[in-house]
Image (cartoon, chains in turn brown, purple):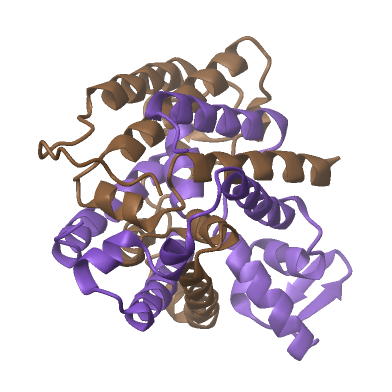
Length: 194
Length: 182
């Protein structure tokens, strides 16, 4: 059953990523250089919609709180984020969109995947020395959410109800998605769809 | 072709919701490690070994957290690995249905052409170097754009916000300096 779900949800995810232009490095780079923010608007809206549905679903008992999976906060999250951001802007790919882009026929995405496999291998080899720096030690409570989600195995950074906060933040993401200009520089030329 | 941001955003949000409703939040970058492990384990079968209560590895990273990565390497037919394969199938179908990217785009993307001309080798070198840095960073951070940024911020995870701050702090200046045209 799990495998069937992986096939269905994975295929939907890949399909939608391609349909919002996320497999196209030109669209990604134009977003990251703040020239064309249509994709940014879609991603912000997606986070908001996902958040509202998930926390709303938890409140009415539709969504199992145990399905949440919160990652640990540590200094390396920021440092790794910097590295990922730099490589993302260089190549126009992130891990998920890179594999999808390769599947759409983009040759450069194959080189991205190859580089990615080597980068992941390099981390596997250097992991003990990275760990020794203390960069992977949990900060601010480690696996925490911003509010305290009822029934969740994670602590809240703040005591306020995490499900209510999740819905409020979700609404904020939706509002920001609408507020962000599609072309901040008044750029009249839209990103090519292809 | 490319969906309107509102429809696309809602569709993407529904996929994220479906994932957390039925199984767990979406993540991708771990599977690069799993594929590395699968390949390395073929070359050196000593890499991942079965223990009384699970799996372990001679590689400290695969062995961490009770050998959960080692277990996935030993059993590639697991949810998260199949998920990434299925993503490729979904993207492939979407591309087929919209008529593909075109030969020129498949050779190198328009933004590269606008900035560096018809230099496919240079583009492949950039994509390769970018991939290396992206995955090293993702593994250091413990997740990527999917797991940290989208799934993480959706769950109001502190780590997701820290990650997004780092990713955009580097990505915006690099994209601006590197790609001035297009």
